[in-house]
Structure formats: C-alpha cells, structure tokens
Image 1: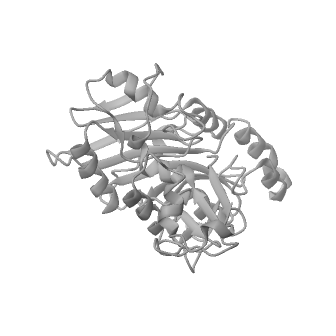
Image 2: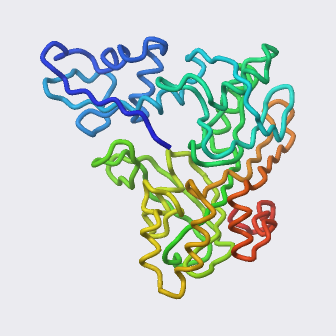
Length: 336
C-alpha cells in the first residue's frame, strides 16, 4: 500500500512549540487527544525516534508524520461521500457488516483520495440507515475480509476485542525463497518504521512494537510456498515484513523484496514454475482469508470466510492445488 508521509524540517519560528500542537495543525478535523494518541503509537517521529507528545521542538528537527496511518485510526473524522461500488458482502447483522475486499480497493478516504474507497461504498450501501465505521483495515493490494461496525457502541466493543487480541485472523499468502527451518512455527520480531525509508516498516529491536505471526506451509513446490498465516498482533505490513526478514518474501511484493528479480536466486529447474505463479498476480499475493470472534453482544461464535479471488485460484490451478487445502482454520492442533 502506498502510504502518505509528511516530512517537515523545523525552522526557527516553530522552536519550543509542543509536538502535539505542531502536528495538530496538519489535521484540523482530528482532535488534539487523537493526535496525542497517534504520537504515542509511533505514527509521528522526531529525528526517526518516537518521543513524548509534550516534546518541545528544536531547530532543524526532522518530523515524519504518517498521515495515512493517522487517518486510518480516525476514519470517521473525514467527510465520506456515498458512492455506488460493487461490494461483495459476505456477512451482516444489525451491528456489523463484513466485505470481501478486492485487491486494488483502498479501504477508506484520506487526504488526496476522497472517493472510490470501500468506505464510500459502504456509505452508499447503508443509505443513511446506519453509519459504517471500519473496525480494522487491510492494505490496498491485499484482498479479503474487512469488518465495519454500524454504530459507535458496536465499534468500541469490537475494537476492544482487536486490542485485546480476541479476534482470530488468518491470511493465505504465497512466498518465494528458502524454506523456514520448520513447516510450521512462530515468527516473533518487533516491527517499527524503517529508518532509511519512512514509507516502509522493518524489524526494529530498539523502538519496534511486539509482533507475532504464526505460519503453516500448506504446499511447497519449486521454491514457492503456499502458506497460511495467523496474526496475533496487527502491525502495519506485519506478514510482509516478517516474511521478508525470514528470506521468503510474499511474491509480487515490490516493497519487501518479492519482485520477479527474486526468481534469479532459484535453481534453474525451479524458475519456470515460479514465473507461472508470478504471472497470476499483479499485486502482492496476500489474502485475508478468515476471521472469527465471539460476538460482542450475543457471545455467539462468528466465523467469516472470504472466497479466494481469481488470481489466487489461477495460482492454485498452476500448482495442481485445491483451495480447500487452505480450509484448516478449525482443525485441531493447527497453527491457523
């Protein structure tokens, strides 16, 4: 996903101004308390470091503001125009609605994109009967399950479950490169902003936030792994960063090392198959396949499965796979 980053070098007229006040000037539609929370969450960096909201600016400080992430945390503060968009609604009740988002569809509006998003389509679908509030998000070029709440109370209750890691989230992905030491396991490395490139995330032992991804390789063929991932945390680009760091990036992930150039590192005999799998995708091969949780109001177990899009189905065909192989989410002793 292309992230919007504001970079600002502090000139003398802003010296000794509080950081939260300075950042608030960029977001007139977001409260100061929300900005303070964004600073604490690491969406604002000073000289590439996380600092306190009360930090007093100094001349030549470099401020990096993750505008897109801040708006993702506060989507309902932006005006949203209803827009007719063909949505694949896969589950709905009086409190929530779940959509199987296609790759290429931005989740919500931000500065620079006011329309053509999933949230615009949900506003049109709601037709003023409710106001949709996104409970989480996935990257523009990742497909799969996205859930929205229909009112503030429902949003708060589901957000609490996300925060307390009571939401069971599984993704399907296709990787290229060496096999991990085990066919299933746990990846636990902290993730923070890449110090060399602010639009990227990276493993960061000093300032990064705890991140855990469980994986289970469903099928391995000619240097390509078809893999199921379970997210215990929801860091930005988490699966993509963890896979890249392990030496097996998601295919077609240009940002994290999964471009076609990676095929050159395979053995000659494996390259033709890899090219066929790459040929199925025009985006990173990652799909939010499954979400389950106990309903915040009824305590009923809710399980939502997003069918695979055409590019994934084509890749399964090339590998001689049946997509049912990925339906392992309720299997006993399964990582996912």
